[in-house]
Length: 160
Picture 1 (cartoon, rainbow, N blue to C red):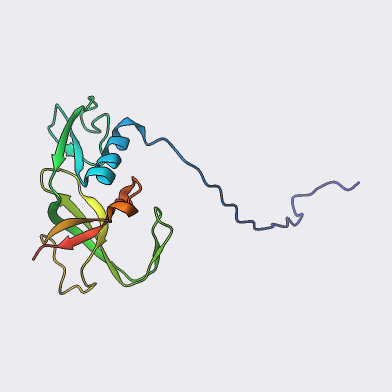
Picture 2 (cartoon, rainbow, N blue to C red):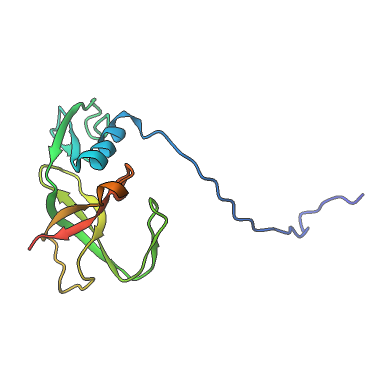
């Protein structure tokens, strides 16, 4: 038998392992996703201390560390806070389908909410046509295609 030395060559065999898993969304996120899927409504949760309305809803405010239990129905319209034009393909983690570049992606803060939603924008990926401050409206997937996840929002449409 030979003794291993520090200088020994190690051979690596690359293996791609697909490990599908499911996790419980919890009481708050489940309500949020069911409202999206079944009623085309977006709900946030309001902190009783600082009064921030947050999406996705959280059981405890990250700032105040108090329990949040006041649900607030939000508007399906909001203001673009930031955006990017994607020039690289991106696979949607909820559908597994690729988005072919270029495409527009942005952060839309819905009226009545203090946190934006990052999502696809249904607008030409042209820097001269997209501006922070533009108004957008949620476009839900057709009812028969909804599954109870964030992909139930298909994209944000600009409001003319």
